[in-house]
Length: 65
Image (tube, rainbow, N blue to C red; front, side, top):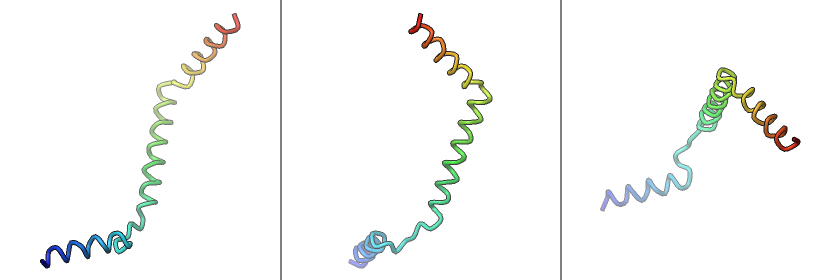
């Protein structure tokens, strides 16, 4: 019975905020910035921006011709 009581108390503390995730927002923000930086570096390194611009220009030219 004491295991069940401990379990229910633990669930209650978690739902009432007994366990804090302080700092989690900063870690998530830093991870997001790292992901965005990786994508930007990949786009610049692979010259994808020029490829996309050329593809759009060809599509516009096909429509106008």
